[in-house]
Amino acid sequence: MDAKKIKEFRRRLTEEQDQLINSMSRSRSAADEIVGLQKTEDEGDLATISQEKEILSCLHESDFTRLRFIQKALNALDRGDYGECTSCGEDIGEKRLTAVPWALTCIRCQEATEAERLSRTAPAGTRTADNEF
Image 1 (cartoon, rainbow, N blue to C red):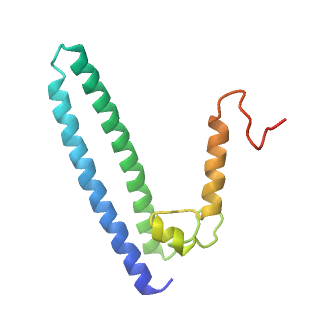
Image 2: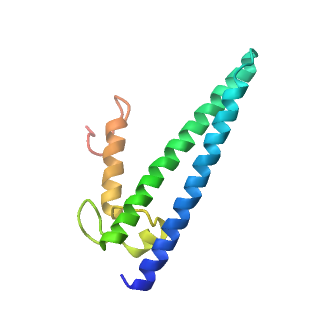
């Protein structure tokens, strides 16, 4: 990968990292506000507050996970192995990196990981391509 592309990926990753940190900070502030509202005794309000806390928790968890991927991608840039699949060692396609600059695996390894995850979480009694009768 040429220096110009590396510089552009670093810029995009750093920009995304900054946006996530700001988003996480806003989520934390919103969570603090919700805690202050919990003094109500109205069941409807309590249910709404509980739902909002759950949503904020999921958003925060998702943001934190993506932030970890971004930091790993930035570390890979520093080491000089950005764009190399952490699973198989092959190059990650430039189209994939353009779409998801924090991608750590090639599309083939990512699909295999997702298929494995789906097969582990498939409800009992369901058929998948791996266990058809």
